[in-house]
Amino acid sequence: MKPTIAVIGLGRMGSALARAFLAAGYTTHVWNRSPDKATAFADQGASIAPSVSVAAAAADIIVVCVSTYADSDRLLRSPEAAATLRGKLIVQVSSGSPNQAREQARWAAGNGTAYLDGAIMATPDFIGEPGGTVLYSGPRALFEANREVFAALGGNPQFVGEDVGHASALDLSLLGQMWGALFGQFQAAAICQAEGIALDLFEEHRQAFHPVVEGAVVDLVTRIRDRRFAADAETLASLDVHYGAFGLLLQLCSERGLHDLVPKAQDSLFRKAIEAGHRQDDFAAIAQFMR
Ligand code: NAP
Image (cartoon, rainbow, N blue to C red; front, side, top):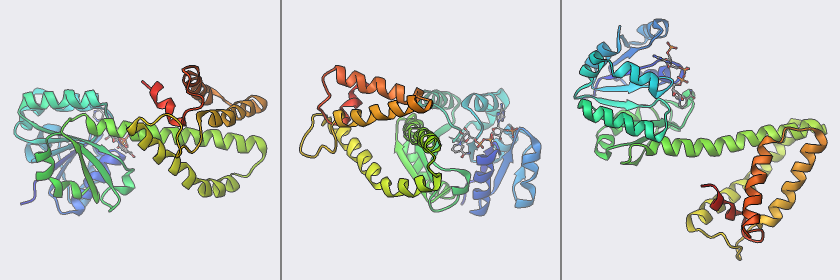
């Protein structure tokens, strides 16, 4: 028999989760702090709960999707809500840090509540779609027992470890990589605009250049994994070659009065590695200075 679901929090993401559970045929109870977002679900077959504890009491699995773990704590740890959560499963998919996830799991264990931490690696439009990825960490048996439930949220539910902090840690690792690329995009656009290059032309060439960048990222991952920092026959470009071109980026920022806070931070990492004697090593050598 399908478990009954409660979705706590109906913002952009929580609403997508609730819609996906309903579409997959799960009996779904919803609660949101601002009642208007919950009432919108009445037409879609959800039960509108007047409180978190009513939603939790009606459900087997409580999926929490609010802004922060602190918001979630205020909702779940009231004596009334905590009592209704005993013997249930919380799936926390609000964004949090690895240690926040570990602390939540400790609280849940003390409350007699099973706990899985989730990290949604998607925007709401991917939820319920084949490409929707959600990472889960915590007891593997809990994940396996509910794999079908998680499949309702997207075609790619992934268990990433028994350390309950690992879904959040992997989330932040992937987001850190994403922000590197997105802030790089601001830099690229500023250069094009300062030099009078149409962004459509940039985009055309970004796509052509993409396999080169992707190849360099893959190369870095394997080199860092294997701690292969010295230049060798497979080295694509030495740190020295990178730094030569990077100096030109700093020069252009200065000439055109472009914001250079991000390249200046990158420059300090280049310098650390060079001062430590790695100028002729593989670019991957910088990894040693990230901790
Ligand atoms: P959102 O649209 O801003 O919605 C925030 C939700 O949190 C609303 O339901 C809001 O209730 C609720 N909330 C905030 N503070 C609360 C409090 N003190 N007490 C009770 N409820 C509170 O955000 P979202 O995009 O749905 O994101 C929700 C979580 O999913 C976040 O942790 C976010 O990082 C994560 N996430 C989002 C995405 C995405 O693409 N959107 C992707 C991955 C992960 P009200 O409606 O009453 O304000």
